[in-house]
Structures are given as structure tokens and as C-alpha cells.
Length: 124
Image (tube, rainbow, N blue to C red):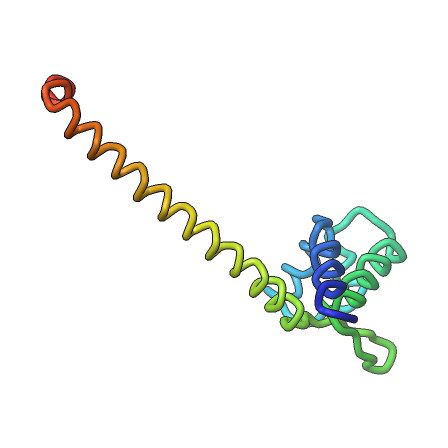
């Protein structure tokens, strides 16, 4: 799967609140079986299994076989790739906000210089 397709799969998987709750459970408590993951939800085991397949295809979880049990575990790599992608945009927006702050400060400074009497009245 190429990088763009992988990000698409990751964000599509994260778009569902049930899948996010499953990931949160795995992050907090470690690996779990399908039955253990299904317990807090009012849905069938096949419905949970469908959610798990989406998470697995996105690379967010992996499943192994332990006798009769098929434990699921969190795979942090896909989340770290999504986080790195988001981080680039966070940096862009923070830069934009810093430039906006500087512009507003310059505008305030120009206004104070242009209207010194008006400024004195508003601060009193």
C-alpha cells in the first residue's frame, strides 16, 4: 500500500467512534480477544469483527493466534505516520498564527501612533 493510500485507510478507520474506542482500549489495557473488545458495545461479535478487519487493513492493529484465542494488539506505526502527517500541518498553521499575531501587533502599534489622544481616553 502506498503512503497516500495508507493514510487514507488510517483516517477512514479513525473516523468511526467504535474503532477509536477499540484502539483506546488496546492502548490502555494491552492486547485483547474479540470477545473482550466486544464487551462494552451493544453490537454483535460479527459487527465488532468487521471493525477489527478495517483496523487491521489500516495497519492499526494486528491479530495473532494463541490456541483458540486470536488476540488483537495495537500497532503504533500507522498512528505515528498519521501523527507525522498532521504535525506538518500543525506547524504550517502555527506559522500562520504567528504571522497574524505580528500583523495585529503592527496594526495596533500604527493605530496607537496615529491616534495618541484617543488611546489615552480609552485607557483611562
